[in-house]
Length: 359
Image (spheres, rainbow, N blue to C red):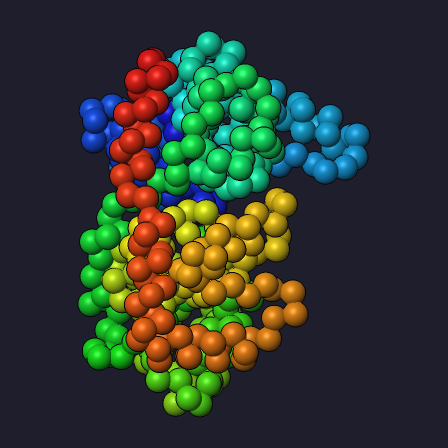
């Protein structure tokens, strides 16, 4: 049995499930170990995975007492994960990042089970920096990540896996008007207050001649829906609001332009489907890696980037309208995104890890 380990955000969970689906398609049994209270605890069981809750604690940035408590918590969680791995008859662990990954990868190491980790971003998180030292193989999205990881494991740059179902969506369920361009707004699995602010500014733009499909993130849904409800009827026209979308292929099928953060998995999906984008990288990430991700797309002509500091929502909204009104620009951005896209990464990873790291 192969164990997927990690999660917390869509940037970890969805690449994990893409790889898990590819492994299952090749005949392997796959289970998911993660935090039952976070995204993976909801999505993995929905996708038919046996799910095992594992305790995980973020590493405290300061305080000796807090770090001692963390060490005890990590030891306890690792021992619990070790028992689960033995009970499930695990043969390999595939870690995808997030602090909840560490106990399972460390438990695999104590059992001498092979572990592989995948890093989606340029700057690896703390869990991947730790677990790279006890893994057999480290898979990277960006070659620049090599210099940021220690340990003696083999490192291969493979890209970020995406679910092939994002290429097969249908826009019908949203009831959007035919013949009008559509702006898709998505702030990631956790949502983004800044992205939501720009979307509301776009809605009230008197020159708006496009529809809006706004995925607010679950924690922002009621707040954003109330904000739309308070707007004049003309500003609410052709606006569809959802808290979350599990079938992103449907959302992409509806869209002509995407307003989004710049997590690696989001960008991989945008490029796989050839979607033009306006990106507002999150500043609240390790080493500002989202801006580094986004600038690569901008340099290739696939996206426009606005930094959050000093951002004026109305100005970004005006740029959204200008891009949507320019067929030549949309077409060029789409072609540039598609040229960067890497399809079949999950299937390649599944074949690779089973060849290089036999269970």
